[in-house]
Length: 278
Image 1 (cartoon, rainbow, N blue to C red):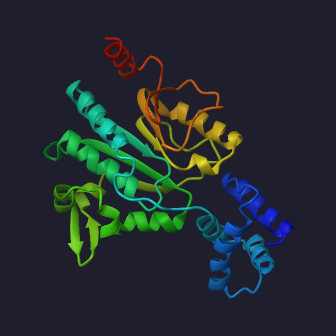
Image 2: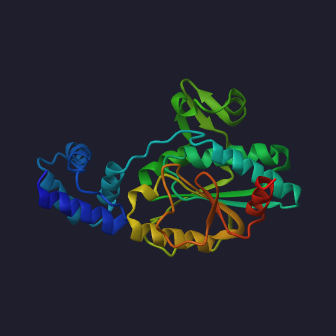
């Protein structure tokens, strides 16, 4: 790929979505862009770039951003965070809480927010029909369409228990559809995480922002984390990806478990410190 063309692709990804394509990724970008070139019948990377820059609808920009990012996920990925979610929800319910609000900031094709919903329903008790709302956002309209459809292959459910699959999915051949009683808790919306402030007021009890900050540079990550601080409740929790860190960022949030953060005065953190001191 020509250096000048690669640079323009990088500039587009950063300007429009905060995605930082580092030097040395020319081969990866060329491979991903070639798929769009074939789909559009365009002969060269430069001709595709010109098409991308001239597309007033913005549809091809979405397709380009989809192509250069990885939307790989599955149910119960990094499952320890869902164990903590369940513990927190049970604790809050025992203390009298009846309303629960969760934000999944990078929902991708839906496996993560549906896992959040499955975990919450198990923790709170399905018979109680909890006041549970999960906002699931992503930049990509394509993966959001998949998430709204809520239909998955068996390979995405390998880490889900047979009991969960039986209770929460409708089988159809080798595909599984999320049941309506689980879907009712979720709202899917398009959101660009690189462009705060966001149109939500919060507060959220739990924020999942996992495996997306790896695409951002320090400047974009700083803006995003500052906005999460605005939106997460004083008792709330932030989960990030296990391969990610808030290191190098100005944040008042502090770690209490691997890739899990809360406010310094959160009773959860104080209790864990007390137990750890025994």
